[in-house]
Amino acid sequence: MKKSALVTGGAGFLGSHLCDRLLSEDYDVICMDNFFTGQKQNIAHLIGNPYFELVRHDVCHSYFCEVDEIYNLACPASPVHYQYNPVHTTKTSVHGAINMLGLAKRTHARIMQASTSEVYGDPEVHPQSESYWGKVNPIGIRSCYDEGKRCAETLFFDYWREHEVDIKVVRIFNTYGPRMHPHDGRVVSNFIVQALQGQDITIYGDGSQTRSFCFMEDLIEGFRRMMQTEKGFTGPVNIGNPGEFTMLELAEKVIQFTGSASKLVFQDLPQDDPKQRKPDISLAQEKLGGWEPKVQLDEGLQRTIDYFRTQV
Ligand code: NAD
Ligand code: UDP
Image (cartoon, rainbow, N blue to C red; front, side, top):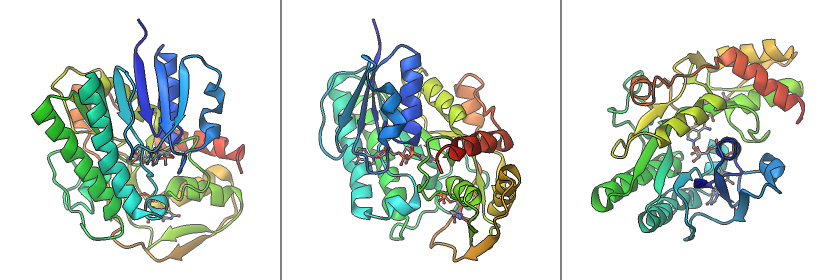
């Protein structure tokens, strides 16, 4: 019999690639999205597929369906968008987790949470492994997202301990690729769009802060492997690419690969912007069958640039 899955946030950047992957593996897929940051264009090619259903719904409100697997991705991921309505961002993570965990409890579905490297805040430990508890400002402008995601993890683990809900938690480090919204606001899409349009490239701060960038295909492979681990292996598991780059290095690569004449401009660093980020992926390598990222930054950037050339 076909397996079935619910993907919340399924019209977003990562959610839409996950829907594609699940359909290619012969799943029956329900994609739920409120279209806050998602785009119909991301899933337009799936409309008409009898095994794909699109539901406009806000995960903050309860929802019922019967599926084997739930992937809880609903939440704006870009600082610009999650800070636009911060109360709703926290509700999306917290009420959304409660609603989806309640659904998993009633239907005995396996459920995966798209958590984030933001749970580590501005980390004092480098690289970050899952055993590090993080350094998060609980009252800053990023906390609606960071603390919302931390609370969602708490709920996942309490539903596991109290109700034996079959949970999986992945902590995603900066992931990029085709289908990011051109106005998403995150660094990779910002730099590429600016370079392709010949606009100044906006470096926040002095550009010495680092991030580790994972191409979306590697992340989706990690999701699928995590979902197939044995019951009782809950995570959290870091999924990301340990290659670490400063924002200046990223800007230089984008200029080189686009052949753009754009200039760098320096703007204020946003409050609580983490200085460094790099995942320790040894747990993922051990538990997810030797999983590791295959697409390195140069190739991933070129594939993403090719996509944005068709968009802007
Ligand atoms: P995205 O903004 O493209 O996708 C989020 C999707 O969730 C959008 O389609 C949006 O419309 C939908 N959504 C938002 N609030 C909702 C609500 N209340 N109800 C229903 N749908 C809602 O971002 P993404 O990069 O695809 O991120 C997907 C998930 O992965 C998010 O949970 C994000 O926190 C997590 N994540 C992503 C990254 C990354 O680098 N891409 C890093 C860490 C965590
Ligand atoms: N950033 C930047 N210019 C931009 C957008 C972001 O220099 O136009 C910086 C941002 O300050 C941060 C890094 O790039 O240090 C990554 O930002 P992003 O919003 O992509 O993700 P996050 O901070 O959540 O890792």
